[in-house]
Length: 486
Image (cartoon, rainbow, N blue to C red; front, side):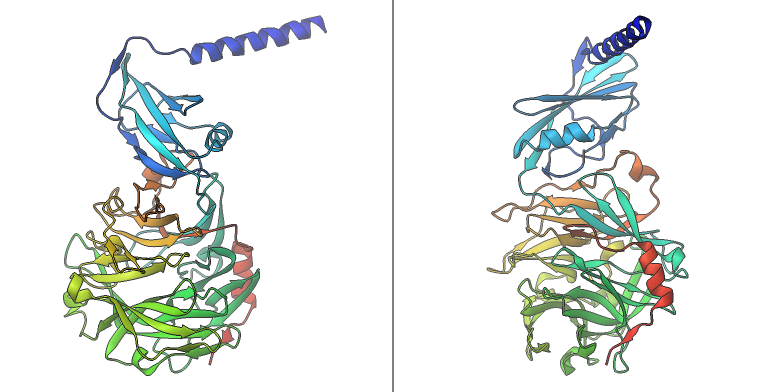
């Protein structure tokens, strides 16, 4: 017993000596006036108090790196060879202190010479972001696909699970998974293929609905859920994808025709208005207002495509909606005029508090993800003021956005790193409506995005995990007949 105790205390002494040695400050440190060359670029960003650790690495060739993360009352010291991986428990304890400014000092060893870089900050906000994010993992291809998955990530940690996998559903295409009210018990996505349909999740009950009736020009495409969960608003699009003659734009997707419809999920009934389903205008990307009493949508006058695609510009319109009857109004209003603003709008998203409408603006057309000039803008629905979000937009396409339930954060897909792969970025909207510097979704290994050959497509925030997984979707696809709408 005595020998065992001696061995135990000897082991503890060795571990203690190693820890003391590892925490010793490097000597003869040179001070740099530059920020460290880190990736992801987390320099001077604003973050929520419930986000996963902002792990990063140095792009420079270094032997060792030390990061000091300082709050007013404490300091967290993290070391690595080239990567800084912050312990989750210590990180959460630090963020639980509430709203604060964290100062990050990075020191690196280059061939035996230590350099301390300019300190940067992380502004921690008390307003939490919704803790779950779903997205479509897809290769950034063109007219074919190999493997598509819908995934869900807990953004307070690094846990991820697969919600749907097209390898389990005869390689059928899967479109965007969206929520109503950021509620995980109210969501939907389109599952294509011979046995497909629109998958509707209401309180854990999964339904598969054929959302096309004989009067519609095509399947339901881009859509949004009413706050009540009873209705969905969709555009019905005849979509044509083609390779682009301009190298910077790669692919153009345009509508040869598109209409606007409302589906009553309680009665499996489709409704529209003649002026929303004729050939004189194109309607697309509809969303309900926060109170459910209006529908915002994008609209453009008919032009022959593809010959006139570069002059095809979509405005934002609003039309009344009456939830008790499911009826649409008879006269739309113009919220954002394409000719006046010299641009084309897509991907509308209303903030849950009803104050803002977030959207993408490109030079023309309705498929901005390969348009380098595509950027986010936000209109104040109370006074009509437009914010061009200069602090948010990058040099490549920024689009596919959604709000957090408290209207203090939004997520969007950005190709700013390399122009090819979209990654989810988060931005903070303060009480005055000012939008702050965004940051990319943290990963356990900060090199993840370097070898990740998939785009994070259509990122959507939710308050919790959805009550289904890929096995449930496989069973739904093969075993349940699609309901028919009329």
